[in-house]
Length: 96
Image 1 (cartoon, rainbow, N blue to C red):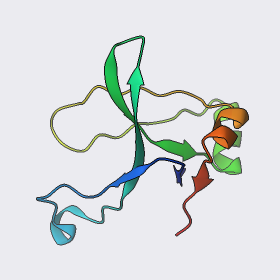
Image 2: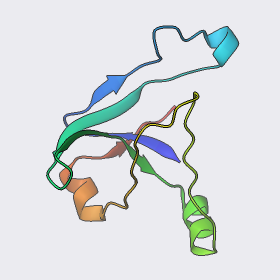
Image 3: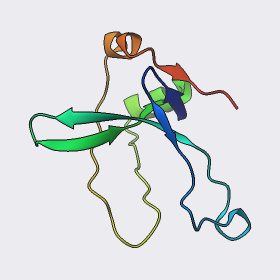
């Protein structure tokens, strides 16, 4: 999957104690802060776009895996965005 950047995003980098030699590479994650009315909580959203091959795998019974680094699992959620939502948010894939 490709990470996407979008209007109003801010970029979160590696944690302060991250050591690329020990822990591996860690790029920046574009997120946007939003207030979720249903839960009453602040949520940081990131956007990812699957490749045509990944979409084919999903259509053929594949699944999406969420990896969390560390020992405590944060509260997370996932959703599928419509093409219209992506267009409104100016979602673009980050290349490189």
